[in-house]
Length: 162
Length: 399
Ligand SMILES: Cc1ncc(COP(=O)(O)O)c(C=O)c1O
Image 1 (cartoon, chains in turn yellow, orange):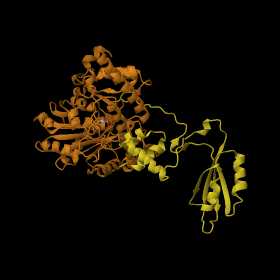
Image 2: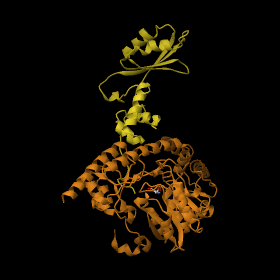
Image 3: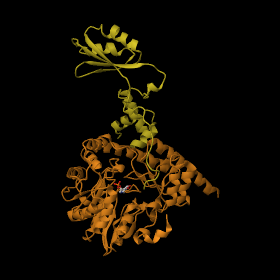
Image 4: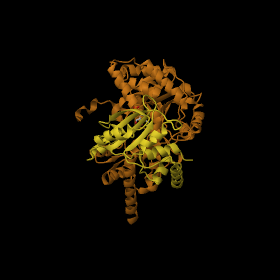
């Protein structure tokens, strides 16, 4: 029996790991791992494989904005319709329904300041049911996807320890 | 060294041979930085942040004084909780637990607290290098029992019984084992306990530093868990391996109060008390560190499978290790000594592993490979090792 959670954790950490390697690590065989991954795809548990990139180290000049949105839920549709209206924009990379002081969290990546401003003014604010928005820009990324950005990898241990 | 002072050195200290692998040591250290090292007997993980933070917080609070000799009572209580939770062993924090400077100090204290000159101590080799030295330094006589690959490097009852004499003071066992990666199941231990039940005066010192790193289906079992053994077993454990806390230097001994208090007496005059900051950090580890330990164990377990698989693929004979973070493959078929093998691997392929004879004469013919290293390092090292073994075999067959 394959431990699904462990399999998922491993590919979440390193999506490029081969099925053969996964099989050795979790004490299974390649065929079973391949089958399990197939099922996980079919069940939409695994949605895709992405790299974790520190864009700050590239030429890309863009901002990441977190937009908190308060809305009045709509009859029969709750929050879902407005959420869908927002997440369909390609510049929206994440969209969550939240507990607490606001309702939707929309994250926009790879945009300029101007683009974010116009997105809020022209696309978000006019939606019926949107009460207010509050936008936060990320100034510096210290850690993302469980990975600390900008760490020096060094092994300070002695060469031989008995 | 100034040779004219040689006669000032005590006979006991002189009687302890320098490490069997001195030459290899020097060579490996010269090459630091250029090599992939799978020769390190300590975790590659950094101490979990919650534990480090607890140490820092204690410093902020100004807790910088000596602790009681035996260790802070809060620390001993946390250790008692840990022992009952993880091992099912009940110890009284007031009298049956001593906080030491690493498991290392506890091993030394056990020897000094119990050994009269000439007393014999049974040592199961291959084993951690300090067992024999601590016995010699305490004027004891080490009696070596060798374990074998055919037995998965387990201690067998017949071998133990043969080594017992009327001078035997204690038996020193250490499972999960550094360097072999062997473990003892409850049944394996039961067979040992059956022998010891016939010799009720013999004490057991059980080094359980790697107890958390046990990968079998059944959880780790301590020999102290057997009713007839509880009162004559000194358990040595600590935080170095399981909690990735080697540099903090905290371990402990748990056992019958007479022995623990005798050990405390030695500790009191030699060490006074274990480091205060580290003791505060250990409270956090012992009470709340289970998840971090589990995550590290799972990671070691995956690496263990990768190493074992890789060694077999490289054509080396290896028994499947089930504990600690070592594999101990045989290199006998290659017509080289352990040291020759490791030296050539180091110079030709820039991979450092440890000759098995460092851990006792019966370790000759084997090498210790530590998997306390990243999967990337392990994979690269395995690939170089496979090339190396292939080349040697080819050289041999071309002869
Ligand atoms: C089997 C065994 N016991 C004890 C120790 C000592 O550990 P510490 O003094 O760091 O607790 C080690 C360290 O390598 C070990 O491998």
